[in-house]
Length: 334
Image (cartoon, rainbow, N blue to C red; front, side, top):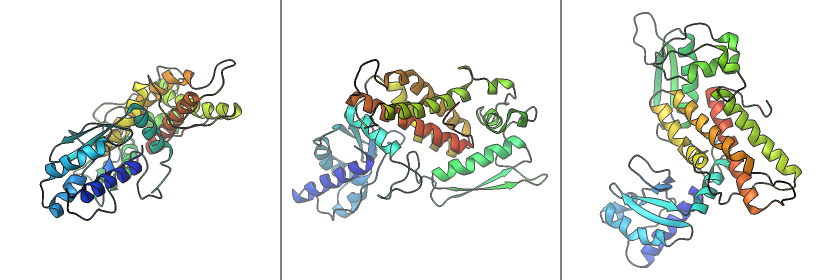
């Protein structure tokens, strides 16, 4: 169940409450369904009770209590909790949660979708905000600011980068690199500057070029190539991806589900390293899971293989999108 599908489910719950005479409101055209905010629980949350409270002449908690049982009786919904002043937190059944997560990622694409929602991980938390980034003349500050322009845009904001004049205060001053990183090449140089937290001094060493598990950039890019290879190999075997239940992959699904929060935190704290570290978690989850995707020996492709492939492709999409935000390429082959 995708957020768009959940939005329609929420509206149906409102409509039933109106028809049953428990609410006296006009059914809105759209219900906002997003990942739970701070203090929230479950897979998704909606503020529909707060939206309807005033026109209904009731407290938000009363409206939430009216809608809760109608949402909880929906196929694919395991439970509904009420938090804060009246947020409805929706827990999906395991199969529905995994399939919804995969569909949301894979169907995201670039820019606004046809239903008006935004790509996976994008929010409007900084909508219409212009965020100045005054930086010193320093290569690390330049790279961090360039990356933040893209990350802040995923949250609906717009960053404006200016170089501070001598004696002028700065908004962004990461610890400078001890030496010029450009000999590492564009991708490894950016990673060397972005992966450490802004208050940590980056290491400018050849370790960033090693194709070994000890190199987190290599693991991310290798995981992306594995996702692409799995799709190609599945095509040769005559099957494609179909989102569904995939058991025993909690590390990967958790890392994918936390990706939007990592983007939000990276924008809020001016810290691209939060995004970089989340990509490492996604890559590690995918690499641990990849061996189960394709059929073995004479085994025929099944619904389970199609669901695993969909999850792998979703992880690959997140890795490619995250690397793009960092300004790092995501090759199909290594």
